[in-house]
Amino acid sequence: MQISILAIGRMKSGPDLSLFERYMDRANKSGKSLHLSGPDLREFTESRAATSDLRKMDEAGPLLSAASSDTYLIALDENGRDVSSVQFAEIIRNLRDDGTRHLAIAIGGPDGHGKDLLQKANKTIRFGAMTWPHQLVRILLAEQIYRATTILSGHPYHRA
Image (cartoon, rainbow, N blue to C red):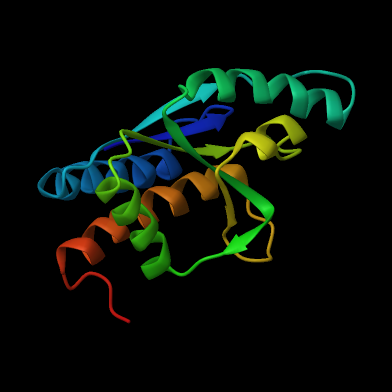
C-alpha cells in the first residue's frame, strides 16, 4: 500500500525539515517488509483568497485531485477523533490487509480543511485538542507513520 502525505504549504530548509526527512526515511525503510511504500510528500500552494472559507475551498481542490478514486483519505482536523499510536497502526494494517492500494493523509492550511474535503474523507483524526503549527504536524505525522511500522513489525521503538 502506498502512503502519501498531502500538505498545504511548503517546509523551509532547516532543522524542522531535517527531522521530517529523517522520519520519512525511517518509515520508508521499515515499511518495505510490511508491504508499505512511502510515505511520499506532495505539497500544494497556500491559497491567498480573502476569506477563510474561500481559502479552505481553494485548498481542498488540489488535495482532492491528488487523491484518486481508490485512495483512502484521512483528514487531519481539529474536530477529528483522537487515536492512539496503536490504533493508528491498526488503521494502516487493516487498510493494507483489506487491499487498499493508496492511503493519503491530508494536512490543511492555517485555516484547516473545507467542508468538501472533510465530507469526502473516509476518516478524520487529530493530534489531540491542542493547536499545532503545520510544520510540526508534518513532523508528528511522519513520526507516527514510522511508529506505526515499528508497531506492526514488533520493533521495540514503541513502548506501551
